Length: 455
Image: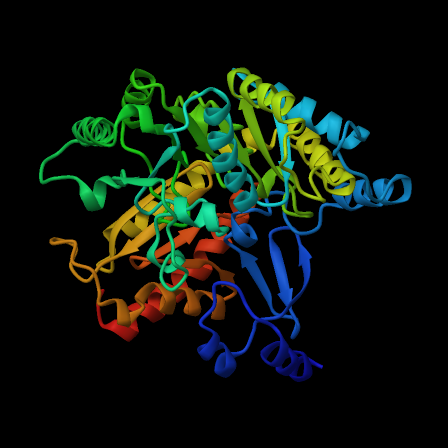
């Protein structure tokens, strides 16, 4: 059976984020079952899912209440929509609950199916509102180097990673790129975090002035940059950035697709870093990834502009067939109830010291240039030389090799560009399970050290 499935996968499946030529030789790891923080492959081998799937399966892989919520809604109303003055209870209740827990000032929720769709929607809303407000030149969106905001044409343009642009004819016009707040990589010698943040804010202001403030509409940022390398913002960064945005009437868009719902130890990364968003996007842990759903939360100022446009045009001409799909909305609503009833965010704060203790002990390893993390998300950045921070040649694929060794030891992690190994376990993970996770990683690191002779 396993060989037949492997062969069928290679023959028929076009895999996302995969070297397709290599896949024809290597084939897939086929998961068949989940239990808590573990998944099991077709041969019965267990793996600790150290990435919570794709930064998303916050409640683990066997939460019965989410299954039951989906079944109840399937029996009651398996599909309906929110087009043309229609609605349904799960979508209404989810919107109310989201706005109730959102950062101050956000008043309306629009639903989509993925983080990419949510951020694509932001681009359209920003254009729409400025046209309606009589500011047709105010359309540019500033995004950061190494940002990740999705893979639709617009969202991938906001993304600041070469692999998402090369051969796709991206980015589109209207995206302005600003600096990445990665102190380890981009700070000048002797530059403190606060001084680095001051310089980035000054560079942002210079860019806005160079573009013309009348043309710059929004700035989008993840509280912690995820797929770009788990980049933790330097001290005072968002305070200084937001002061610049306010000065030039530029919207603050918080991409909470990874950080939202407890990943940094608070409900929102915006709370962790004192971000005051005009627009917020979320997905992934909104439903613990059990069903696809995302949301765009907007301020009243944004909503009023969109409302005005819909009255003038006759409709807000945007939406998806599956916006607020009732089954997905019911599962998301149950997920939010579990977070509150079990104090999942408090649990994250409680186990974070164990996670960070394990993670940061690798800072002394000869292969590791930087170990960083917050809450239950972190990364190790591998280097050829700790003193100079010299990277390994990209062709060496050091992080990918380490991740492969970890998988062999029963731990699923992810390698990111720049030889970065990322960690993002389910929020329900216990101290004992974190000890097990890093014991598996220890074995992988020992094998890596033996292979490289560094250590």
